[in-house]
Amino acid sequence: MLSIKKKYLLLIISILHTGYIYLIHNYIKSFKRHSFSLNPNTLEIKEDYFYFLQITDTHFSRKFTEKQDKNFLNFLEEISNLNYKFVIHTGDIFDSQDKFIGVNKEDYLKYSELIKNKRFFNIRGNHDIFKSDKIINKEIQDILYNKERRNRSLLVKLKNKNILIRLLDGTPLNGTPKFYNFFGVLDDNYGIIQCDLSINMCHYPINVLKSHHPSFYNCHAWFSGHFHTFFKYGDINKKSDKLESVLKDFYSNSVYRIIGVYKNNLFFNDVHLKKPKVLILNPIDKNLGVENEKEDILKFLVFDFEKFVIKIDDKIYTNFTKEKECFSMKLPEKFSKIKVEAVNQFGTSFHEIDVKNGTELRPLPLNIPFFYLPFLLCGGYFLLHLAIFVYFKKIFYIFCLRFFYNLFLPTLVMKAHNLNYSFFTSTKAGLNNSFDIFYFHLIFCGGYDFILLISFFTKWYIIYLLFHLGIFLFFYKYYGLHFRPLEDFTFIFLICYFLYKKRVKSQIK
Image 1 (cartoon, rainbow, N blue to C red):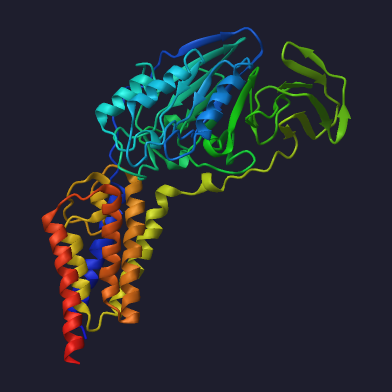
Image 2 (image 1 turned 30 degrees about the vertical axis):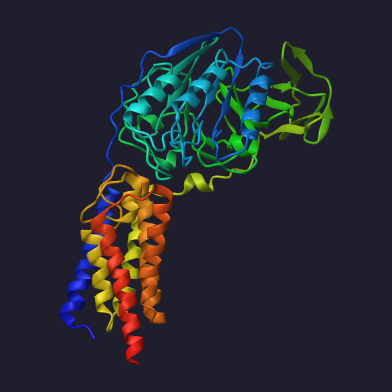
């Protein structure tokens, strides 16, 4: 049985341990960027509307089938028939998580050649920088951004309105070996550009983006990717006058987004490859747009269709007119729902709006406070430590072994992150500049100690070391045999020692 002094000592160690995790929460290094461009590219449009396209998370890689490449070529062919002003790819163009390749500069050169003359603007995503360093990242940025600034602006002059579109690169400067950089960082002071409607395009949704300059929140709409959602419209959130929506990934859904601006109002609809494309420009859904002006005329766009039908409150209307590619019709005095449905040989598509009640929002992932979860995780981890204290009894040396290994030897998880030793990092997080490392390592550490707790109940103390061995082999499988005598020999010695001790005990019996 442990003495009172030893229990107090271990309790203090646990408090320090948990406090260290709390400090990691505030240890987020900023990534210094160039100043945001205050001289945006300007595009003047004579019509009273325009539309552009968003595509995201194509994840070209050996990991996936050739279907992605074929679908993207079909996408390029399909949009050649549309009168879009430009296309914005919001990141994860390639999946450089590929075990054997990492970031491949040649792939980006081929991609750039494919989209040449297609009016593309690219934004990097977290999967675009795995296994990369500053030099490779700089080369890829030059390719994707045509040697322009990484954070850029487009100013569209629509009649007497100014529409500002910001292209935000929140991806860290340095890549990591695997899947750690789930969070983005923005550290630019964006300045002020006078506009009537502002749209931010970024790979990361707002709740997984860290910034020391809150000016980037000042927009009417935020469009992103990253979450790979499977809802009808992706994830949609709306607070006051700000609309936020996540587009589904292209690589598994073959979906892209049409974003339209009519006069000073914003609309969007997600469409599937090969199927008809429908976008209602006016009126506006209460939840799926930004309304600044009202008009009593239905305006909509339809592409790649064999036939379409207009339904207003389930009543079919046919008295529409067409000017160039835009259809229009006088609206009835009272109505709530409008649906334009189109059909071709590949299927049916529609755009439906509700001007009174609004289409149902699906904001759950966008409402998760990712940057505040450490408080909950730290509290749970501290309770786990207390539970371990209760079951110490005669196996005090195993817990001491755990602290010795974590405090004074480099951890396997940290090694997997940057292939460097880390000192005094019992949380397995270390002082690093990627916030999501904290989450992964803390959850990992919790599972690690949970196995230890189970071993107290079962009295199979060797299970703890076997679990450690499994992790050891897992990371060596994926990151190669990096010969580290201090860590490796120490661990092998411990395993051999306990197996030998167990054998001696069995022979004595």
